[in-house]
Amino acid sequence: MCSRGARPKKWPDPMTSKERVLTVFEQREPDRVPCWMGASPEFRDLARAYLNLRSDEDLSLHIGDDFRRVYAKYAGPADRSPDSHFAREVTTSRTPFGVERYGYGYGQPLGHPLESSRTAADIGAYPWPDPAWMDVSRIRAEALRWEGRYAVLGGDWSPFYHDAIDLLGMERFMTAMVDDPALVDALLGRIADYYYEVSRRIFEAAADVIDIFFIGNDFGTQTGPVVGEKLFRRFLLPHLKRLIDLGHAYGLKVMLHCCGGFAPLIPALIETGLDALQSLQPDARDMDPALLKRTFGGRIVLNGCIDTHHVLIRGTPAHVKAKTREILSIMMPGGGYIASPSHDYLLPETPVENVLAFYEAVRDFGGY
Image 1 (spheres, helix red, strand yellow):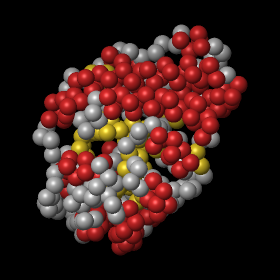
Image 2: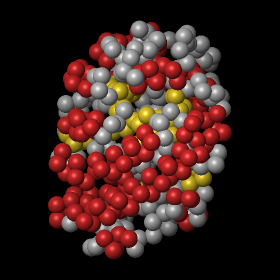
Image 3: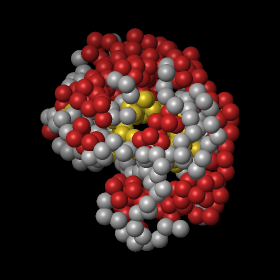
Image 4: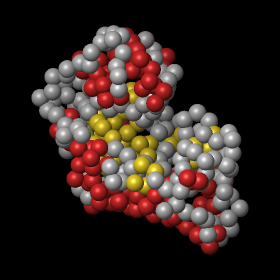
């Protein structure tokens, strides 16, 4: 068991992390299951303090994370900054599209600036962001720090569905898909255009040192998809495919973060050429790991399945290790699996000792 003040482990690595991950993307068995850790800054602070580590890189080395990530930096007008010059005192963040949000993490929107829009012209008149506001000049140098040892994630997160909800409001967006499809098309098109161009600029600058285009949209709830397959294919899938095609055009694998019970949409996602799914909440409807492996194994990389709602938050380290071993026995055969918590954002209420027990279990039981 990891202890406070322990030095980062030296994992036995016949393969580099990058080789290991890319082997999984080829649907082959690597030397061991790759590890993934997405975590909030607050959790990382707690974990570093618990282990007496100096940096996030030390933490990644300690748990054996096979991935690293690079980001573009905002360099646009101050009044559109994601973290300053807010119009409201309570605001904690701002989206690229000017929606101010309040609350923990990303928070919730404080308003829906396009809620009263009636026409595509209204959408066009909105002050849309300029992709050039995102500075991509340092990304290549940042990725080169890792000297090709890790699988590097890059590109813009591109949550176009969530931004549409922020701008129009959930109820208006849902009803407009039926009552005013042209309005929805105009809105989603504008949002996706922005994300496409930001990522294109990133890839022009640094695609040769990036391995995976990592994007995120939560198309599921605990009890099923947010919209049925027909509406999903009509309104959301085309924009997702456009981003996937962009990544492939630059020789990258493409992985989608998606929460909830979205299993009915997975065949459509596979049709787009998507390479991997990240999150995979085993407590959501139709997301049982054995069912996912049986139905989709060999067709798409599966990344996740270690329950953050119950096992990691409420369990003991011994229970976490036992559950992780069980999931590994289901998901490992044949390759195509990456071990990670069932969310990309470990929260500070998650006991650090449980998370460490998870990664130790992957080390102990994840070898091929």
